[in-house]
Length: 264
Image (cartoon, rainbow, N blue to C red; front, top):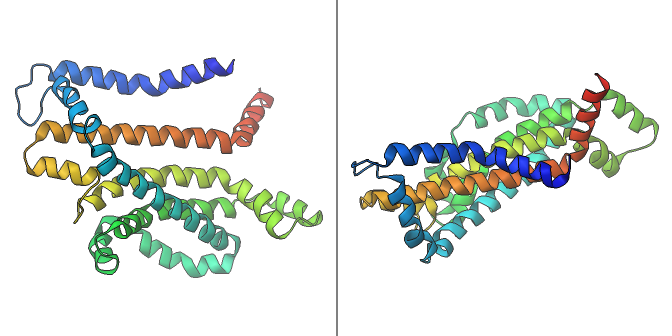
């Protein structure tokens, strides 16, 4: 199958269900007279004025995206580093496991008031809230991925003298990369939620701030435009994560395809 055909099929598969749901929403809401559930046509008609032909993209959307990416990348750095260290040593894992189970059981939104006390109400607080939620899926998946490194490969690398950074990069992280990317995908979903929640507390800009301001001023149609924009942003970030996954784990998908082909 050609590359163009694969890309076309993947794009159609990704857009088919959202397009069908939007079409269903359009039809079902066409005759709506509810103030709180306006027709989708009215909502889409306001997108241009609210977001595209105003300064909200630079004032609200861009800061939200930057906070999300900053918190997510910091969570990836911390999660992969700590997860590799914890997963590589059994005693360290046994020592840290009770604390990890305790901390990950705390819902990140609960930490918002606490983080406001220490980090204030600026961007630092919002980034820390995102980190506090994104960290755990990445950390725990990294630990499990490092623990699951094939013992045969470990012994083989030891026999060939592969040690230190080379062993960490080519064996441990490469073997754990499918689990790590899974944790990143889960963490990104959590991060989008926490981005919105953090901007609803003592914020002066951002997508979450705009949506809650529209709600408080009874600008319901404008509020729905913000919710739709948030959904589009989440979809685009998920699509970028999928492309990243296909790029980084190209060897893994090729190996699985070869194994399926050999088992026939």
